[in-house]
Image (cartoon, rainbow, N blue to C red; front, side):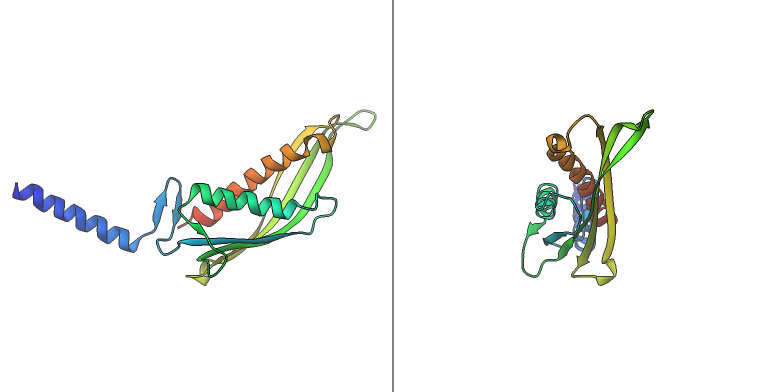
Length: 169
């Protein structure tokens, strides 16, 4: 019985010491134990020919992802982790030209610059541009498929940013 009690005490001590000095790992992400809050600032829209609300929509989409997939709480004042940036490009290009200059596909590309700030450790701050593209049949009107394409692109870019921010601890 003494052996079981001794093993239990050692296990408990190990868990307490480990939890006090390491980050919190949730699935494939790691968040520093000292980080409890996050803020996502306005993403300005610097892209020509894009929907005017694109920056607002991206910020909201990314904010929802962090709320769903982390323990962090949204805070507008003194956040532990902060994201901001700009939509830099929103472009539709022709893909796979056919004889007679007809294209089979069009490609929507969105490029977003992101600045990441860690209030606890400035050495962890970074900025990076993320982009993703999706092809769609050129016989489809962009306005008819735009909302769905943007949603898919935002999902991928959000995942890439999320991994950059929380996958390295």
